[in-house]
Every structure is written in structure tokens, then in C-alpha cells.
Figure 1 (spheres, helix red, strand yellow):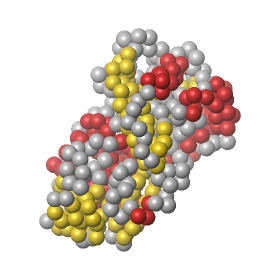
Figure 2 (cartoon, rainbow, N blue to C red; figure 1 turned 120 degrees about the horizontal axis):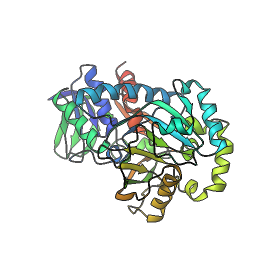
Figure 3 (cartoon, rainbow, N blue to C red; figure 1 turned 90 degrees about the vertical axis):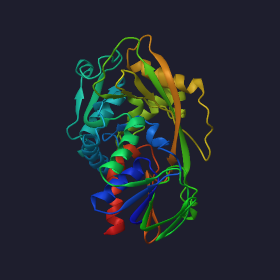
Figure 4 (cartoon, rainbow, N blue to C red; figure 1 turned 120 degrees about the vertical axis):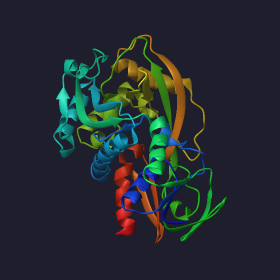
Length: 371
């Protein structure tokens, strides 16, 4: 069979491009070297984040992606487990960042909460919390099940062909050579994630790509607690660029560098989201290298749990699962888009926001590729 578009990579970015292509009525095949999605797309929070994304295109893509996620989740019967976000502040400098954010266009529909108001969404907030930012824009899905469910829906309901366990060796449209034969496609979209040394990667040598490793934990509360929204803390206000790029964030960054140097040096910022069984997915940390080691030192996990304990009252909570994820990263920006050949597009999210922005990115890619 001849396809209009072949998509290499079946993570969330590849799946988003498959949907965007099918929305245009194109014949689509997705090729992946693994038997199922196995990378960053299933090892994250499943947290579709809008507020806090970098101002400009990233935030705009996140807004659009959130809307598409709602459509897809309904059609593919993917449960949306939480809606919204509470960013809990424990310092006056953090409150200043919240107030500054609310004064921007990105603060639309968000609001400042007192501690008691914030506990209406996250009852376990500690007494150290002095105020909070509430955003209604976020969604939370269980990524390790949502991504496979999305792929099945694209195959069954949308007519996307999937070729799993197939390694792409060479790309020269309309011919794509794999370890199982040749596929004909008029155009190709490469979504390699952090496996960016494959075909047509010569142009990436100058793009300062590396990999980021993050620690993730699943925490089981000793007593049932219900989080209506996702939870973040002061550290997120100093890391997410939609907050951290504000002039008012300079004082907070300096204060955190003094008060929590180990957390800052290890890229720790708190996100806690809740799964259907009541457990919390908690993270994360950030360590960079061309080939990050596969190990998960306990002391890094302890830094994450330290911040969780400072923000939330969860006595007796136990870690029941641990894992690491890796994603492509670059100091040159959050998104790499390139055209190594006229009918080929190479797209890599070079920050940890693929789940939040992929549907918006995909629509832009198709518009660029097809006009």
C-alpha cells in the first residue's frame, strides 16, 4: 500500500501527527522500532499543562493541545482523572510571582487563592502554604494507559496503520527502507524523541541536543485523600518559564538557591497528580548528559519527597513504585523543527512538555508540510 504520510515514532508526538494527518483525510502509517510506546510518553505525569508554559508559541500550542486532548479523550474513552492545577506558595517571593503571572494574558481565567480556598481542591495542603495559584486549564490522564489507548483508537476508529517492531534504516521519499522491507509514502514526519541519531540526523549535530533524565515516584497515602487538581510548589514557579521568565521571579530564584540548594542543583520541582486508585504520581528531577546513567539514587528521590512533605500533609505515605524517564533537551529552545528534505519534517520536543503541546505542534507541522 502507498501512503500519503509515514510517521516515524509512536510516542505522543507521533500519534498527534497521525491524528492531524487523518483529520486532513490522508492515508497514514506509523512506524516504531518497539512493540509499543516505551519512552517518555508513558513515563511522565500524563499532565497536560497550560499555565506555566513558556509565553508565545509554547503556551499557544498547549492551549490548543488541551482542547484536542478533551476531544480525543472523549472519543477514545480515555479517563480524565483530574482537571486544573493548584500551585502552592510558601514564600512571599512566590506570591509575588503568582500576582505577576495573573497580570499577564496567560493568567486569563486563573486566580489567587487563600490556603482555605486552595484546600477545597487539595485538602492535604500543609499549614506552611500561604497562598496559591489556581488554573482551570490543566488535564490529567494516566499516560501509561492513555498512550496505548490513543494508538488503538487511531488504528480502529481512524484507519491509521501501525507497524510495530520495525526499524527505519533509510529515508528517501517516496521510499522508506526498514529492516522488514520498503514502505512507499509521499512525505515523512520524523518524531524520534531522544533517539535522534537515526536516519537524516546529520543536520542535528549543531543543534546542541542532549538528554534529560528524571526521577518519578508513585506514592501511596496511608489514608485516602482526594486531589481534585494537580499540585505544584514554589519550585515550579522558578522553573516553568511562563512563571520563571517574569522579572518578579528573580527574587524567588535567589531565595530558593539559598534555602534549597540541593533541590535547585538537581533540577527538583514538585508535581503531584493522582491516579484512579488513589495513589499519587510524584516527581521530578533533572540531570543532563549525552547518555544518562540508568540508575535512580535514593538521595534524589528523598529530595523530591522532602518538597512533597513541605507542601502536603501525608503522614505514613509510602513509595510503592519508582522509575526514570529520559527526553531530548536543548539549551537553544523547547522545540526543534527542521526540513532535512523537501517532503520530510523532523520534529523533536526538546523540553518536558510533549504531552502538553503535541497536538498543537502537529497541526502546525501539517500546515507547513502541505500548505
